[in-house]
Each structure stands twice: as C-alpha cells, then as structure tokens.
Image (cartoon, rainbow, N blue to C red; front, side, top):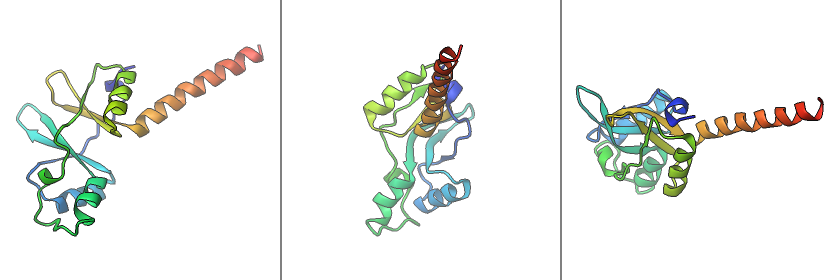
Length: 143
C-alpha cells in the first residue's frame, strides 16, 4: 500500500502571511490540529510549512504573544518533511520516526499538496492489518 492510498485528502491550508489568530480560528472551525502552509499557484498548492495547535500553544500562548498581529510564518515549521503519493506506507512511517513528526504532508509528482498522513491514519491501518492476522490464526486453529 502507498501513502497516497492511505492519506487523508481533505487538507486544510493557510497562507504564511495570515495571522496566528486566523490559523487558530480555522483549526477550531474545521476541528483539526494542523494547517498546511502553502504557496498558492494556478496549478496547485505547494506545501512550504505546517503549523499545529501545539505550535500555537507553545509559541504564542505560553509566551503571552499577540496572536492577532503575528504571522503564521513566525511559528510554522520551516524545514517541511513531505512524502510522495507513491511512497510505500512503511517508508512514510520511517520518515515520521526519523524526523519525530506526527503528520506528513503528501505531495503528488509535481510537488503539489495531495493530502496528509497522520499517526492516527497509520494506527488505524496497522490495527486492521493486525486484526487480519488474528483472524488468520483463529481460522487455522479451528480448521
């Protein structure tokens, strides 16, 4: 299975020049913990960073900074790690493990945003795989 088959295609984006307050509002409205920061073109959205609810809490709230005026670019991750739609799932897991990240933006062949792979997606996938193995063992024992 590939990352492209497993990732969530419903991604929520934001521009690096939008405010932290706008980012927080979008997260609340869409009930998500992250927004992909993109550069928008006619052909597609190129991911350039990611901002998470944790970034907002640790980078803004804990420092009593003004979220109304501060831009997303001030707290977004600038060294974005992405996966390709064609990458095997286990390669995505390895990337996430190596970089200590819980969310991996997924790009298409042209480098445009295609989706996002989260630890939750992976746990669901791996849980189903384990469940299949359990059923196989059960079947063998009762055959």
